Length: 137
Image 1: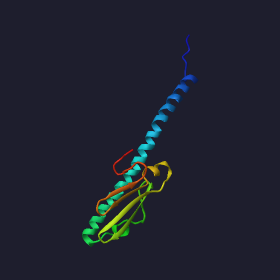
Image 2: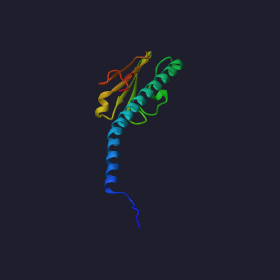
Image 3: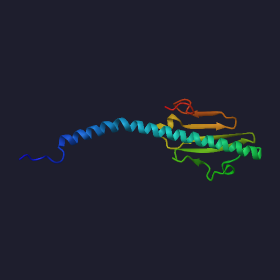
Image 4: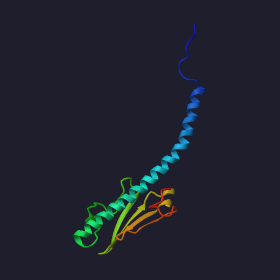
C-alpha cells in the first residue's frame, strides 16, 4: 500500500517565502510612491476647493475671507490624511493666498514641500520635483 503524503515540505515552504519576499520587494516601493502621490493630490484638491469657496465668498462680500468665514472649523485646516496643513491669508480685499505645507517630513517633504494658490489663479510649489502641481513623480 502506498501512503499519501500530507502537508508541505520545508523546501516547498521556503520557495513560497522567497516568492513572497520578491513580490514584497517589488510592490512595497510602488505602494509608497502611490500613497505619496495620493497625499499630494489630496493637498491640491483641498487648495482648489478653498479657491473655489473664496471666489464664491468674494461674489457675496466683495472681499476674500478667512478660513472661518469660508466655513472651515479649524485654522490651519489639515488634509484628511493629515499630511498637509492649509492656511489662508487674505492679503487685501482683492487677493488671497492659500498654502498647503507638508507636516510629515521625511523624503516626501523634500519632494513637494508646499503648494500655493492665490486669488489670481497662480499656482506655485516648492520642492525637489520642480512644479509639483504638474509633475507626478
